[in-house]
Length: 407
View 1 (cartoon, rainbow, N blue to C red):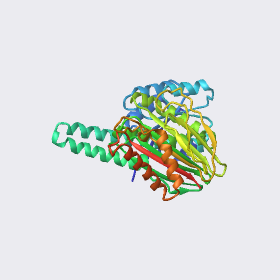
View 2 (tube, helix red, strand yellow):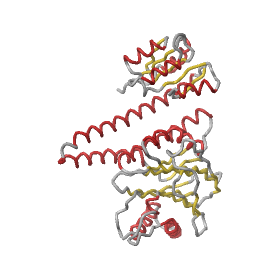
View 3 (cartoon, rainbow, N blue to C red):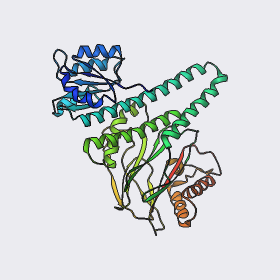
View 4 (tube, one colour):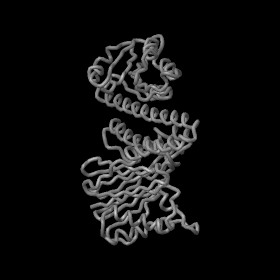
């Protein structure tokens, strides 16, 4: 049986929490303290998974309590949600500046509060899992570096863990088809584990998202960052749905992901290119945001040349103040979109010449014009053309491609 999440509520008027406690009694174990000092003492005795913290309390208010929590090494990582009747922006800004993860105003809407609490608990659980995997890898490497004979075994285990991460979190299962479209994908990592990733999410019966990305670097770190970005995408969609009670736009999603991850990516000296494509087949629209990723190639039914579709936004992890914007194109049944990583277009032949986007577009046009075989077979023909161009040389970078065909 998995451990139930432990939530600590610090409020000098606990009656405010009765309704929320009744709704969440099946989800969490709730403990209540009636002052900031008592709450910190309880938290140090048994570290909670999340803290609900009232702002207006005598002796030590919620802001000072939060400062002390975040200054303590044992408690600094615990997410804090402020509870307050203060609805003005300055109060919210003060709480968030102190490190709070969220802000809930009183009177509490128990349904929305429950969703926010569960989302934060899920995010904290994922963070602990990633940290545990990182610590396990670091301990393993530290032990085995003392023995050169075991160093290769450590590397193979790291690759195995990274491969599992890549298979389960970065790539996952690509649906053969959903209403109005079918898909095919191909991925060739340059070092067994890569930072390329993609995700296809069916939003409803007439809407689906295609997310593609490429993390700077290779190996386990790139795979972990790619997995974190995919989780941030899903978290952003969930949070924005709760905040706005409507489906968020691609631009809103990537702006939220950028705010969530850029400070951490800057600390890690890493970044990732992303492109998010949203298809509404019955409306005949494709809305997309490109964050420094390679341009997609859109080939319309009956046309002989593919149209590059690109954007001018920076990658995720470069600039916190970047504002991501979206474009919208008309699409129709029979149109096909090819999205790909720069490992394909930037590969060099023996003469130092790049394969380039023009050659890739020509291959894309040729395989679709042939109109034979599955989508996977068409991607295999493109892959073979790239290998022939490089005379079979090993690719220095990861090569990922995905075809979306509207039916």
